Amino acid sequence: MSPDTGIPHAGGGAEGQARPRVAFVTQWFAPEPNNTPVWIAKSLMEQDLRVDVLTGVPNYPTGVVHDGYSRWRRTREIHQGIPVRRVPLYPSHDQSAVRRVVNYASYAASAATMGASVLRSADVAVIYSTPATAAAAGMFARLRWGLPYVLMVMDVWPDSVFATGFLTAGAKRRIAEPVLTWYTEQTYRWANHVTATSPGMRDALVSRGVPEDKVSVVYTWTDEKVMRPSEPDLQLRASLGLSSEFVLMYGGNHGAAQNLDVAVRAMDELRDLPIHLVLVGDGIEKARLRSLASGLDLRSVHFLDPVEPEQMPGVMAAADMQLVALADEELFRFTLPSKVQSILACAQPILTCAPGDAARVAHEAGAGFSSSPGDPHQLAKTIRQAAELPRAELRSMGQAGHTYYRSRLSEEINARALADIVRASAGRRRRARGGETRGAR
Image (tube, rainbow, N blue to C red):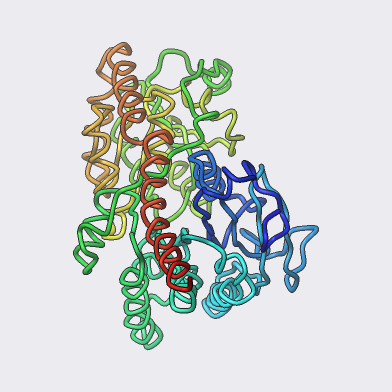
């Protein structure tokens, strides 16, 4: 039995006791709809590490506590074989900056104090750093018990805070920006090692003072059991009245960050060709995008409701090329949208209308085309160029992207890299403990 949670670990016994013990700190965890922390925790277990998850009471994305949980009570459970300790927090996920700050801060304080038993008995902590306040528990444990931590930077603060519309201007921003900048710099400084999700993010962290030998790129992989090459959903084209037309598809959130009006406006310049744009998903910008397409009288733009992840590979395969779109913002220059990995894993050709790493990956993989973000005219020219290619050449691009995914972005490659980093950090802790034990003797 685990001494701190009372939960049995897989691979117990004498052999199991020799494995490094990891406290995986993440504010969000299933049943909240963010699968990445679950994938990371499972991958660490599969890499022969003992893992305890330290997370909060589930309330994302609505801010309402999920059924069966209490905001004020610690709980213990097993999720897909992973021991999970939940600590109380203030549930919120609305547009109030104050309530969002309280939500983040309450989890940070609760994890550091009420999760102390998980942290104290670990050899290393792995911090899933979004929000960046989650690192406070790791910093507390380092100060209190000398626990090393690996900081997984999933989005760069304070840039991402201001990019999402919080504290965008005025006195509040003037106060918040230096405070958040100082805090995030401390989380990097105190970390034993830092991981970034893309080369651009790594470069940004190094430019902010993180030593080069302290930061590594660990790509976030996709759900490879679901996102894989698939036969096309033939009913999709039929439902839209399409047969041999060239179809460019976007699947995902329709938000301000995606700047999808550029794609809609590009279609206005392609009326002379049988080219169609299919937008799958939902978001706060969807109604406005519909109005834009209607105002331009674009019958070549189609809007579809979100589909289940298991259906998405077949839906994607019904198109000729997949679109990745992001606004031309500095933050997105070192952001690699997760849909890039999903598209490549499904062996689909890709067209990026985004800055930085998304375009770089498409180019390196030989998986498709890239167009400057924010420029409908250039995007139209690029779509026209792609539509002129034979279907066989497009499929070859998709296969090249799949090969690139397997060799660079896959779980096999990146889970092993992360586990090696975690073991190295845990080894220092275990050696220090051994020295303390010998000294006591």
